[in-house]
Each structure stands twice: as C-alpha cells, then as structure tokens.
Length: 421
Ligand SMILES: CC(C)=CCC/C(C)=C/CC/C(C)=C/CC/C(C)=C/COP(=O)(O)OP(=O)(O)O
Image 1 (cartoon, rainbow, N blue to C red):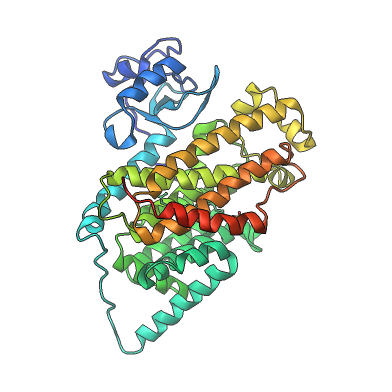
Image 2 (image 1 turned 45 degrees about the vertical axis):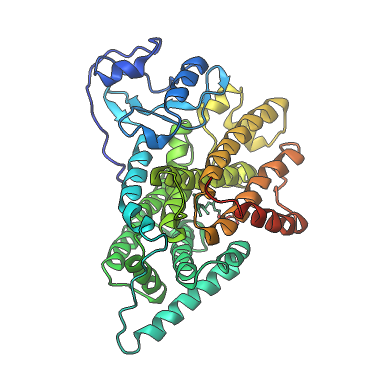
C-alpha cells in the first residue's frame, strides 16, 4: 500500500495543542500542530473571510472541509498539516487530495477552455477497429444502462463523444468496485489489485487487455483524462481490504476521495466547463470532488447497519466517542437520542459537501448540467429519507421513492438552465 509519501517538514518539535494561530507558526517552521486539533469557530471564520475558495490558496497550509470539532459542529477549516506520532510533519488527507486536484486542473485548463468545446481527436482508424470500438462503447452503454439507470438517462443528453466516454469511465469504475464488492470479493488480494493497476497502466499506454478496457483506452486519447484518479481509486480498494475502522474524519475523507471523489475528477474533463464560465478550473474540480465526497458520505450514512453486519464501521471513531457512542452501540443497532444527535451532525456535514458541489454544477457545460443536477438532487434526498426514518439506518434502508425520483428530473432540468453567472 503506498500512500503519498509523508511530507516531512521538521521532526522533534514541541507539540502545542493549545497555541492559537499554530498554522501561522507552522508556515515559518517554528511549531507543529497537534493532529487532532482544529481551529476554533472564530479563528475559522476569520480565515474563511480571507480565503473563501480553495482555488485561491495554493500555498496555504490550511484548507477547508466541513469538520466536527471539539466544541461541536461548525468549523470548516481543518489543519492540513498534521503531526505523526514521531513528531514529524505530515500532510493531511485534504492536502494530498488538494494536490491531485491542482494537478488535474492544470492538465485540462487549456484544453477545456479553448473554443468552449472540446477539441475531440479523430479516431485512428485501422481496418476493422472502428466497428470493434463502437461495439466496445455499446457494451459500456449497456452496462451503464443496467446498473445506473438514472445516470444513463442523463448521459443521453450529452454529445455522443461525451456520452461514450462517460460510459467507458463508469464501466471501469464499476469493475474496480466489483473487485472488492462483487461476487469474487472474498478472493481478492492486494496482488490482484496490483495486477489491475498494471493493466490500467497498459491501457493508458494504448495496450488494452479486453474490449471494455479498449473503450477507456480510446477515451483517454480523446479527452485530457489523467491516470492519477484511476490509480487512487484502486488505492481506495486496497484501503477497504486493509481497514474496517476510521480513526477520524481525516482518514474517512481520504477514503471517500479514493472511492468517490476520484469519479468527480475523472468526469470533469469529459463533461467540460462552460465556455462563458469565469470560475477557476480548480474551483470546478473542487466542486466535482465535493460531489463525490458528499455522495460517499451519504452512502456510508445510509448503509450503517448493512456495513456493521459485515463488521465494518466507516464513521469516524473519535466523533463516535465524543458523542458517547461505541462500536457495540452500532452493532446493537439501537436508535437512541445520542445516536440521533450524532447522525444529525453527520448529515449536516454531508449537506455542506453537497452545497460546495452545487456551486460547480453551474459552471459545467450546458448539456452536462442536467445529469449532474439529477444525480445530486437524488442522492441528497437520501439524507432526507434517513431523517424521515427517524435516523434508523440500522434496519431501515433509506431510499428515494420512484415518484420523488421522477419529480427530481424536471427540477434538475430547470436548474440546468442556469449557467455561469
Ligand atoms: C459538480 C461538478 C462540477 C461535476 C460533477 C462531477 C461528478 C459526476 C461527480 C459525481 C461523482 C460520483 C458519481 C461518485 C460516486 C459516488 C457513489 C457513492 C456512488 C455510489 O454508487 P453505488 O454503490 O452504485 O450506489 P448505490 O448503492 O446507491 O446504488
């Protein structure tokens, strides 16, 4: 397993959890923050007013994500540099992810904004390959239609090139997920994931292993898609094999990035940014990442009971403890007031990620906005359903009724008419 290497800044420095403004001193190297400490609400508010968007502080050591801090819920700025037990400065999950976001944004910046439309490269036609390729894309479309009906419908609104590319990406993600979640999951070893990664690298170099890989191999030659989010998704699968508990939100955030935030990053180069968008590419990527995180957090909150039955608890252990809850409470599946309060704060955080995502949808190309709005509105409603079930996510599965799903489609369409301001 290979996390991005720790950025060792300065070992053997005194930890001072009580020092106010520690991030400022970290910047000039004089002090190391305690890994568990986050800003107070006021300090967070001050910093927020200075740095409203991720895109604006590439050299900053503080980033924002909705976090539950000691004094309750509220602070949205998290220290992005944390100390490991050896007193070394390591970058937090958020900083690692942020670095990927910046890299992806830089990669597509020019291509996406040239004439507004993507300059799609023509097919390199060898006799017979074009029809094979079309067959491969058709197969991807069928898989997408079978497993993600609403999303598939949404892709029908995109240009054929974009539609096919999204299907190819979807299929690769689904196959990756199947490795650890599918019928053969119990036989999956880290070595199998290494092989899957080697195959990914081959595919990116134009040597696909099978037909479905060939569709993605073609997609990555046509759109500015980078391999990193794909590799990171495999890393998420490794994490899932290795871990069944998450110490804190930082760990959970990294997991959510690996398994879902990556999908957001893979999708932006295909969906495209509106030609009249004034937003920075980084901020659009940030929203796409936020949507992946929001979806995954929602998924986790919906599936608490199901996961517990597999011996897994994705909820941050420190926040459970702070709420006076233990693993045993979850295994017992009792809906108490402690549980309800805990769930309320978790739902609130997931909604903050959805809010962050919404800003970016407006900046996408017109044809991409509808499917994204539809999936956002539908997935966010799962949170409402958890509330409607009185927070019993142990034995009741929160789901959005067919009627509500149908209603969401025109709502999504109406929203998609709004573009960059
Ligand atoms: C917002 C902007 C600027 C762009 C959009 C970028 C996109 C498309 C982001 C979406 C990312 C995404 C779809 C992540 C997957 C998250 C997730 C939890 C999927 C759940 O998949 P399943 O496990 O099949 O779900 P169900 O269990 O609900 O069927």
